[in-house]
Image: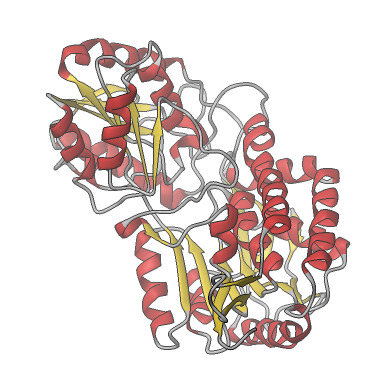
Length: 476
């Protein structure tokens, strides 16, 4: 079992102020795979103090200096790429090929893109040729970064890299149930040799270190990715000090499949939802199908779900692993049972363990048909390999159903009619709309409407989240 009890504060690996061991569970076998420490208020205070001191000099570094550090970090990341994939596979049960080709690759992609955006970003600019006013972007200050377990290095990279790039200092709290990747990333930071105090890591849970970060008077900004419930608590905690809060929260995406969709639209939609074991906040977990092709779509969905293998993370190949924890497993199974009790048709999968797997938090790819948008499975974020299929009559009805949710992170639509695609995409109330399965390019903004959060991550928008904008008059 890995011993990861230390924190990284002021450029050193240090023991916590007081012992508070926490076992990290491997979701494939339900056994401990590592032990970490849960930090105290004193640990958070020490990290923030180091940030405050370091900020005075780090904010004065040039763009060229910071680019040099980030390019070194990219080199170290590439060198330790395989270690990162193994860490993610161990802590969250991601199949090793998925952990390598998608999860770990996302961290490298964000690093590369932020380096590009930083090279192009102008921190000093004249307001207008006719004006003597000057616009200056400067780092917001000390940042508290709280990251989730479902896309661990993806979210660390989306927060830490722009904070470093803009001259901020930071305390990172990765999820306590998947902290190993975050600690490996910290080793990379240390290997590069960033100035002490610029980056700090304190492990802990939301009630402890999470609350300490969000309410800390010397933290200027909190960036959080996780559940909407936790996002509300963070906003309340942060309100007392009027700090900036950037939230990337839950989702309940709709996927509109029109009758003129491309051939494999339904099958691709199933694969999209089930990938990462259904643990993606922008997954299209409500599939809306035009009535004229409803039965064909249902048949294809059932067939595709039954083709998806569920197996151990250590095995290579195209399959899904377990969900992250017993808490998540029980929640998902409860929601599957609620779908059955509310009258939806269980068309594939179900609450039983997959064949041959009697240990671990494994769940069958599950499809519900005959779903109405007022059922729990259509309203609540399940965060597991579960999809609801809902019929619709026409375009207006489809848009109304998709927007009938408190969330607004990612929605999807499938049609060969470009004019219709553009028209519908503009009507969907979400931060991202994916047409015909096309992924977002690196550097595009990611974030949500309504209870899916606020702010944007990625690209120049991700840099701007960590900057204050200053107007200076009489510049000429």
